[in-house]
Length: 55
Image 1 (cartoon, rainbow, N blue to C red):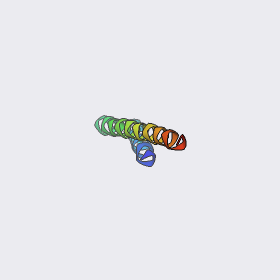
Image 2 (image 1 turned 30 degrees about the horizontal axis):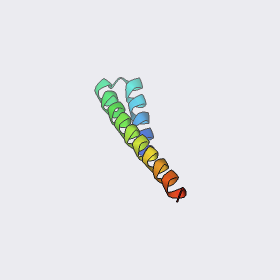
Image 3 (image 1 turned 90 degrees about the vertical axis):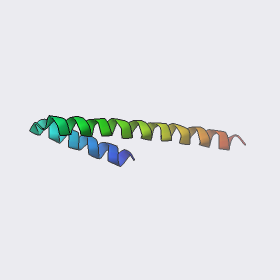
Image 4 (image 1 turned 120 degrees about the vertical axis):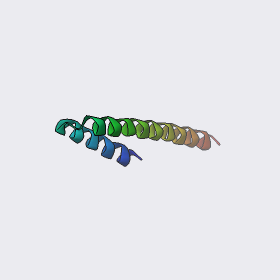
């Protein structure tokens, strides 16, 4: 998941440099959404491992 986030971030940066504003904005939005999904899954994974280790 983090791989896709970084991929869309790189695409948006390259598109922004080359002047493709709509593509850059769309890729940046997708990268943000994927990053937040990754962040939520990471926190859930941490919390589940903490609660499992206490047993």
